[in-house]
Amino acid sequence: MSERIRVVRVIARLNMGGPALHVAYLTKGLEERGYDTTLVAGSLARGESSMSFVAEELGVEVYPLPQLSREISPVYDTLSVLRLVGLIRRTRPHILHTHTAKAGAVGRVAAALAGDARPPIIVHTFHGHVLRGYFNPVVSRVFRILERVLASETTRLVAVGPQVRDDLVALGVAPPEKFTVIRLGIDLEDRITGEDDRREELRRLFGVPPETFVVGWIGRMTAIKRVPDVLSAFSRLLELGVDARLCLVGDGPDRERVERAAHELGISRSTLFIGYQRDVAPYYAFFDALLLPSANEGTPVVAIEALASRRPVVATRVGGVPDVVTDGVDGYLVSVGDVDTMSRRLAELARDPELRRSFGEAGRERVVQRYRVQRLIDDVDALYRELLADAGLPQPG
Image (cartoon, rainbow, N blue to C red; front, side, top):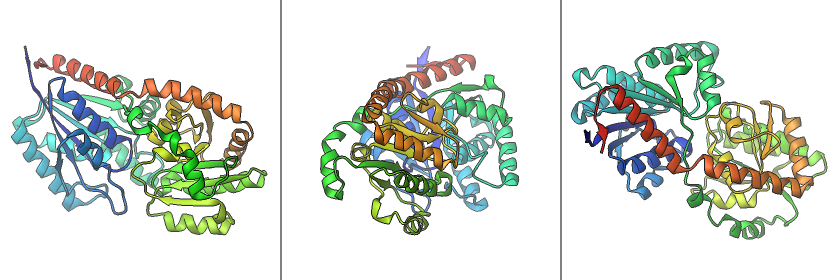
């Protein structure tokens, strides 16, 4: 017996990053597998850049929930819960699937309050987590307790990498058997195609000689990304005698402080502040290596895209990063805050073009297959079918 399976998929916001790509590709891809998905998304935080254009380009309609946002608000969060309760009662989904911490909390509370319309299957995906490194110890402990309670009311938890799963198990969120690991899926061929055509053009545009080593960073300038570590590592790279430039692509609440820090370090003339770019693919071609010194990451899309562009990555050994970057094979992993090692690793890459080439080829060969969109859709479809069978519900068709 088969029928169209109704899914309500909730994400806090469609901001720049992996989760927005993930839900857009999933919603589109599962449609052909017999799933009718209502994609619910909240509003962006101030200064954030939208990635809703990916959903629009795929023809995926987004159900807006403006009250749902990243910030904690008793009033707006309550309104979000109530609106979701109403949506669940109207659509009667077989599956509620939430993504990111805020949507996970709001969505699962709404499911609990939906009465006889409560979805028989509830899934939550951790795209990383905010249980360590984001807040003070007291707040982090409260959030851990909340996640444990919510996990007890969830059919299956999904982690985007084995390190993320292991971290959540160690934090006591849930036992390992409650987790399934499903990595991100990204249309790398579409997002990275033809980027090498822009390398010389961008070098001319920014006045960077062909032989100059370019260190790149892409992201949102917030505390968790530790952008000052990028500046410090780059400053020390220059002290090691490397002819280099630094290119920062992105914006955020810390931008003014980052620009001031670059001036104080005396590296402003060697640093390019590009700001937000909707199309970042050409910048991977401009870079010779990507530096990612974050204090926490789920699955870093910028690292995946850099490797797919044959660019080695120097990154911190946090969250899901080791699942993306293989130390000594396609990049280097370092400890958070260890800017000396970051600069030394960058210097090794700057002085050895053949090492950069071999790292780049190894990275592309691995990530293009591992993070295919089709693999993501296959994995989630298989998970849904397993849970539907366990619940005695029809299979999609």
